Amino acid sequence: MKKCVRLFLVLSLLITAALPFQRVEASTTFKDVTLYKKEILFLANKNIIKGYEDGTFKPEASIKRLQAVQMLLRAKGIKDFNAKDPGFADVKKGDYGYEEIAKAVELGIISGKTDPHTGKKYFNPWNTLTRGQMAKILSLSYNVKGSTLSEFSDVPNSNDFYTYVNALAYNNITTGYADNTFKPYQSLSRQHFSVFLARTLQPSFKDNGANRFVTAGLKLNPRKTFVYKYPSDNYTETWKYGGKDEFGEKWTASGSEGKEYYSYRENNKGLDFGIQNSEILLTIPYPLKQNTKWTYQLYEGDPVTNYVVTSMNKTITTPAGTFKNTIEIKDYDGIYYYYVQGLGLVLVVNASNQPSERIFELQKVY
Image (cartoon, rainbow, N blue to C red; front, side):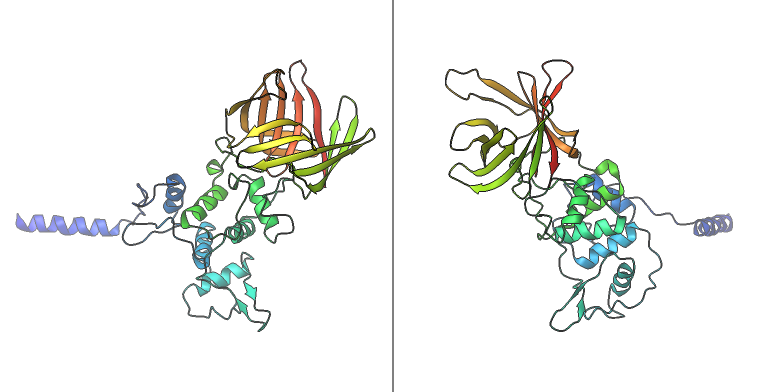
């Protein structure tokens, strides 16, 4: 009987050994992950990201340039790391990460930098990755393209990262910060890189802007010239920036009927729009989010106008283009105002009568 039992155990072990091993999917996230659990778990289950032996992910630690490259290559399913030497002075054959770096150069994901004094190329694998660099390598890795007229205030079109950051914004991979900045030179954390990568791989993780809040960026972009049209009168005006005065930033609106002079003032309390050296015509309070309500009265004794934010992520089209994440503000007289963060006012619609009438729309920006 004992021999039968031993034989049974031996057979069981042999059968178990013959079965193929299966990778166990992560059923819980890392013990120190409290934000972005779904995105991080998504990448962990695909073996794109790895934690530490103590069960942590260290989400707030800055991600290194080499680590980002490794994650991207895993995400792309790269198995063959045979590539020519990229010629970096700080990454030699035999060094940890050399093969991944060489492959990333071959794929056009990274290029490194050349020292202008010595002519030598460097990759700096253990330097932290910045948000701007993240935008570039993600865009290059996955051919992320697209362009929006809106701009982050700290990434003008003269910035080296503009094309890549603008492409991520167009594709809702990023919406930037509430103050309309992107912070391209700020170090990127492991959790935030994971979020951006997850959004690139899986559209369901993208931020549709519905729950965002705004603290700046609704004034006209002073780096641009705006052409507006009044469709009912077939009348156009060209708005040009004219510097600052005691009220705020000055704009000159020129048309066939002459010139109008307007000003914008934006601070942490909100946005004021008015006539230069005269009255304020419209005030929008900050922070602004879905269902924000306020009232405004131009002069004492005048009717009080009630406003409400009815959407933070409308998609609207004017002759100037299509705009995502447009803020829709309604007054109680049935007038709708559409603002794009980083650009300004793009459309005004009178919906009090049907069909609704466009009374002011952006025709061109240059």
